[in-house]
Structure formats: structure tokens, C-alpha cells
Amino acid sequence: MKSMLLVLAAAGSMVMAGAANAADAGADLAKAKGCLGCHAAAEKKVGPALKDIAAKYKGNKDAAATLTAKLKDGKGHMKVAATDAELKTLVQWSLAAK
Figure 1 (cartoon, rainbow, N blue to C red):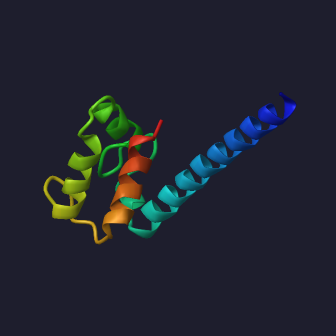
Figure 2: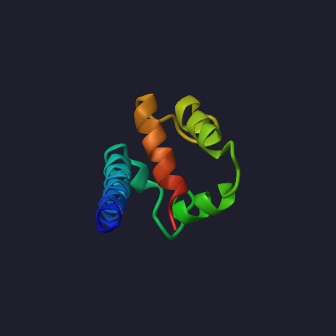
């Protein structure tokens, strides 16, 4: 029983570490791609605050696809020069903003 608890605790800590690394990767990528020149976490700059974007799309199952398309195609947002994987990371990071 103790060994099972240890395994579960270790797995949980790995998941938490992965989530923290994903958040760091999203923030670093947003900085590198210039997103933070127009967007801030909590307040409106040129574009809406990340927390407002996340709130707007909360519960929308098509949010990631919609935002990725806007960034990729430049419709309603300036076109972002990024790979599909980078766009996915940016969108997931933005939707997780609080």
C-alpha cells in the first residue's frame, strides 16, 4: 500500500512539474514572438488582456482552433510567424491565463 502511494505521489509531482514547464514555455514563446508588446496578463494594452481572452473563450470547445486560425491567417489579429506547434503552445498558454 505504501509503495502505491509513493508511485501516485511521484506521478502527481511529475504532472505538476510538466504543467509548470509548459507555462514557462508559453511565456517564453510569447515574449519571443512579440505577443507581450500588445498583450499583458491582466490589463489591456493594444490588445486585450490574456485573462480577458481566456474568460471570453472559457467553455468553448472550438476556442483553440479559432484562436490558432486567427493567429495563423491574420484574420482579426496580425499574422504571427510561428510553427503550428508554437501556435498551439501560445494558444494553450493564453487560454490558461487567470
